[in-house]
Amino acid sequence: MPPGGIDESAHFYADVVGLERIERPATLGGVGAWFRAGSQELHVSEYEDFAPASKAHPAFELDGPDLDAVAERLRAAGAEVRWDERLPGVRRFYSFDPAGNRLEFLTRGRSCRFLTSSGLLGGVVRRGKHGMTVASGIKGKLHGYLQGTVTGGTFIPTGTCTATCSASDFIAGFFTPGASSTCNLGYAGCRFNFSYTAQRQQKQGLLYHHWVDRGLDGVHEIFIGDIAST
Image (tube, rainbow, N blue to C red):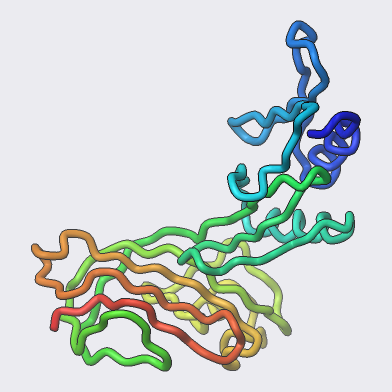
């Protein structure tokens, strides 16, 4: 931090970002502040020859609701919130502290496993290398998120979902009858970003083993790469 900036920075990290301020040993000298971020610590100090870190940065991983709450607090405090969807399966944004240091905040989608059914491959917009067919029984892992709005029903915390657990299955399993989701009404009210990876590419006889399924602009579904046998 530049000289005289520690109080403003301490307020930012404690009250806006929401980190716990912890004691900084007086034996260290100088002017600074320490914070706890989960199992990690963030240490900030004042320097005469300070220059903001506009590229290298710390990244804070949060739960989904907490990520949105931090984004709202940052906006309310006048800080920039710059969303970046380039990382498959991850919601994240960048911001800057009062001294101009770059910060990243992110949440990772939930991870699970998938098993393919055989068939032809298709899509709306395709990028990168892709094949024609995929064999049944291909195993792999996926992570990502689906974000929409549910209206007309009550959430059931103890609900269950089918094995395939499509968007419609999820609404039927976790909400009372009459609920509807914007993710069942087209892309306009739904955002999603999923990353699929099939391990042991050669053993499973795969031509391609990584696929991203993304819909972020309310208009297009984009396939990047592929999981394909031929």
